[in-house]
Image (cartoon, rainbow, N blue to C red; front, side, top):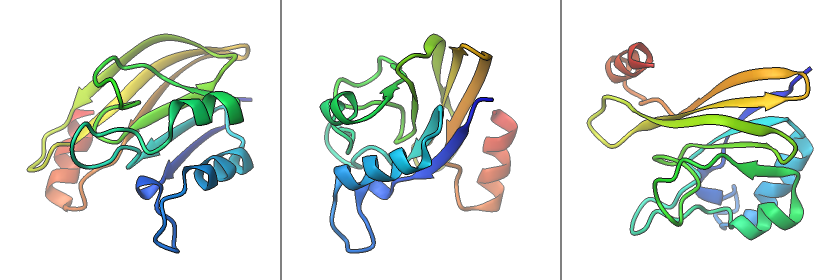
Length: 139
């Protein structure tokens, strides 16, 4: 069985209002899913760097980010990231543009596990009902 999870990491900021990427990785280890779709994983401005440093995942977790090849410092697209077990093979990946007033997107990956193939979509839909429906229809 393949275990899948979704987690809004709120740019790595906890209830104590401190950014702590190590704490996020600890929570991911507790979840222990084979695939994890993250939302709000990038900083909002500038180069939009991911709040989880690559080396932190590489050295302290069993996951790797799906590569979308879009931004050097980002792991995903518009804050959406897909993490998969290091043992999994990413067959295909693609960023998806979603209709919205502000930049929004989704990420999609086809991932091969020992137990079979899985298509994963990660997204953070708009709070507005109108735009949320348009985004769901686009997906």
